[in-house]
Length: 191
Image (cartoon, rainbow, N blue to C red):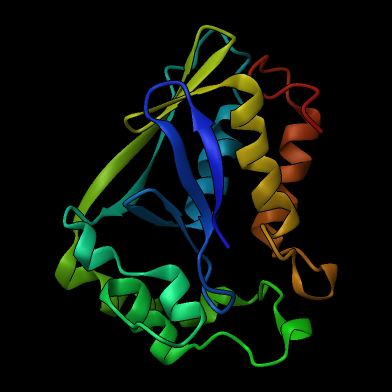
């Protein structure tokens, strides 16, 4: 479930997994796959902090808020609107609250999820760009370094509700290893 994070540029914004059967993340009305985000972080981790002008990944931008949908309505099975509603019709919230865990094999639904979002979104490139050593910009959103770290930790743990059986996908484990070894000051010592 997405959580609220404080940005420096836009106040509180939503970030996170929005359906436990998908590996897609949202950042307000940007939607992208977690492995693309992790790969971007890996690329940042490979830089020493001096030569990096950032790293990019592909995302889907839904301009019309109505096309985004109503997450809480979909979770409670009362309002299936927009993209989020379409995904919850296909992959409903579990009846058993104990089954509410992020599926580490969420990439298996990718083709279906892409099919649902393509008609209502624009493909864009998002850049993750360090701004000195104290801030990081993700697309149009500017974050304090500590909040940027919290976004990454959210993905590492499988968001809220965490990874099913505490099993991270390989791309998340790889990101964690890269972060642990990095000398880039934007990521160093964050975990």
